[in-house]
Image 1 (tube, rainbow, N blue to C red):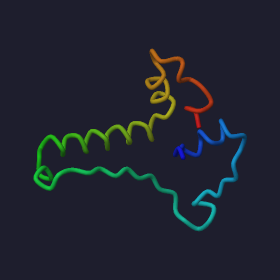
Image 2: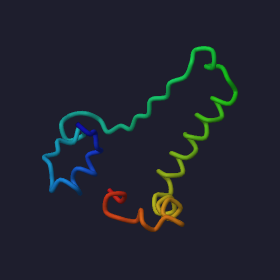
Image 3: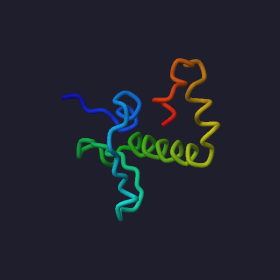
Length: 85
């Protein structure tokens, strides 16, 4: 069995049935789980990494079109329906 994001299934598998969480009483959310060794929890580099992820997410939310253009620049082969969803 291969795990695939829902947008990939929609494009590749001819429309599976979707049940969006936000339409079924759950608030919309995004999640990213980071795992580190307990000895590195206070590592300055880890804090900088997490701050960088937050800055990137804020940029993406505030500038979706610019983010898309940066994503595909030099990688025009990624400018397809699968990556746009």
